[in-house]
Length: 182
Image 1 (cartoon, one colour):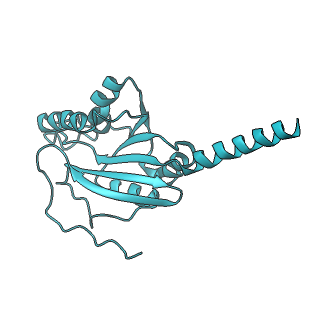
Image 2 (cartoon, rainbow, N blue to C red):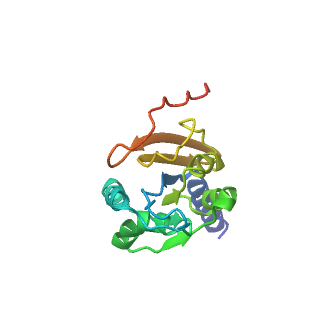
Image 3 (cartoon, rainbow, N blue to C red):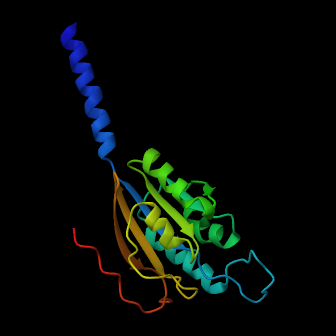
């Protein structure tokens, strides 16, 4: 009986250790291009270019089985991710850009082994990367930057960040930020 209890405890501890070592894979993008014809509209739809970009995001990530997609409450964020969520059979989850650190903390604690997409804004994407413990891979994200996709692999308190582009080129030319030496 004692051997059986010890074997069960060893199995349980081994499972917890495996769970603690699992990574969280996060892709972070800015919403696609929005309509700008009405400056008084604080919540515009996607422009025709933005609809194409949303389709490009779907094509870029279609081989990934996402577990969750988080967007802000704005139409442009939701519409950027809608096709991907719809095709994968998952619902969009809304987060407040004012609580990025809390979102990152919650996902790092509860989403081990999961794949997640987060859609943000030009003034929140890089801060999200930092909230996950990553280093900004570029200096800034301007109002003209729509084609960046940031990929984070978060394990424990370490986040590896990589940068790619998707869809038509639509970004400010800038050099990547040098990574700090370990």
